[in-house]
Length: 430
Image (cartoon, rainbow, N blue to C red; front, side, top):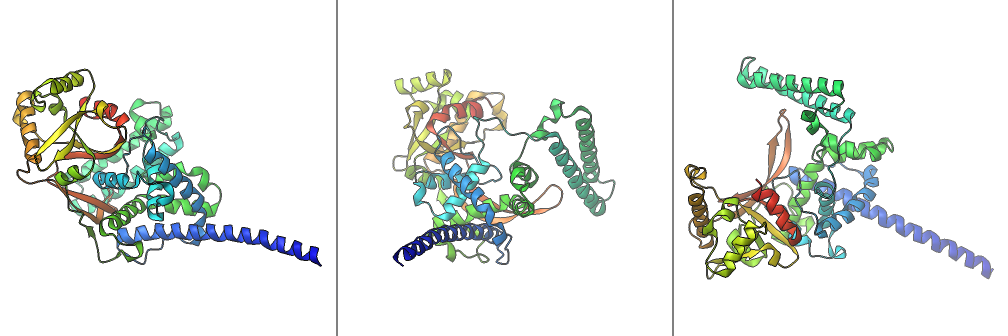
């Protein structure tokens, strides 16, 4: 009797462990499926959206793998964190800086879901970009022809057959038809058609191609990944919205309103932001070239000599009280990740070609107005939900940031070790 009871208890114990693991996976899958739907609900301000169901729970393994990879990417000093599929570069950089220093176990589910998109949408320059096969390139060309045909028919109906936009649409269709014919005849060897083989992760068709292996596992997998790819940019923007709302309003996920709020108002004054955070400003090429960008003395002479030899400098540490900002050589900066913004201060067009030195001086003078708080100042005013028109006439949900009086062209999250190369490629050589 004793032995029999022991065996029975042993079997029950094993079964309980399996049950616990199954329940844990089921709850985790349910949590992420709810997040996918919630992101779409919020971006569309529509509580009725339930794109994903329990039949899509097999996405869990893929999401968890991407989340872990995304965490490694965010920590990797060799990868520049620039995310495709959005016009939210300042917003995303703030989000990266907020999540980047944390330990993985301290992240909540929403932050982890964001990490998945870091893994999927950030390109690694250390690896060549993936390319499509000839059959997929042809599929893309056929899709573009179909999209432009829809636009052509719409223009013909709304504007008339002889309208310039209608005629331009017809020429675009004819151009893609010629490209298709050339692809078939030469197998894609013509360098002019090389771009047709470049994969865009923001495109649902290319997304499906990148997930071809998973989609071929069966009808159930095919449907789930097709849904995921069709909504991937909207899910990403919904996840960004939820993270930013939680950050700026200190609100739990369940209390974020779905239908009544269409804007977040961070109201981030860039001058104050620079004084509070360790943010770098990359000077324009004309600022680097202009002697007016440099002060007097050995330190500034060294900065200029370094610039001439290919070692660059940045602005760091705005002191609002004394209205000063320091120039630092990149190589002297602490080795860590930074939020970085590329300055874009326009010069009088009459000076651009005729007198670069005067142009450089004007840009420095305008920049110092920002430093001294003279005139309108750049502010991240709002992040708003909306819609965007597609070239062929469709409409997609969107999320945009509004930086008033902007003096920057781009924001990113980058490690000090990659800054010099980034400046060389994206500022000096442009």
